[in-house]
Length: 258
Image (tube, rainbow, N blue to C red):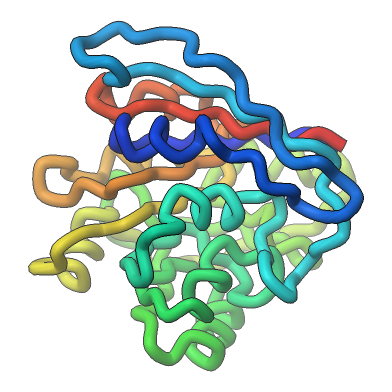
């Protein structure tokens, strides 16, 4: 796609204290992101519930390393938010490939650790090889438990989805899918098992091709409250993820246009 839109939810003071000063260049080919003004404050406090917009320039040539690895600036932005933090704990739902366009590889190499959740078996095997010190779960995440049909894109694994209608749209454009059965659970269940007792979940990344809202519906924020949440919000991902976290989070929209 030519344009991608990601949403960043998080503690208001954390986001606004860092992202409003984000000016560093992304590559020699670009001058860095443009930061929009704060546009709303519907709740109490100087930053509560407010919104900042980041418009990223053409991506440049940093590709898969040597410093940043994500596809659309996600690790750069998160790295800036947590620039003063030497270690942290991430949760990546829809982790996909651990080395290709990964949001968390930068943090793993920096000494952070976390949970990677990915239902495609060969990618789970790659995660186990590349991320031996992470928890790698071979399940899909939704608002229910059991087993569901997963539509695995044969050549473009990042387009794989639990949503049959999303897969049908891609098939109409000539993308081949295989149907496989995968175990499904809720994000709360995974975090209850693997993150219980941790002092914090530093950030949560969710990119599941249309099922983002169901992922959030299966997360009990009273028990597990990430400091920052990043979620894809372009189609097929629902725009309703803008409100899923409630007014106690600030929202940042990061758009990358080619």
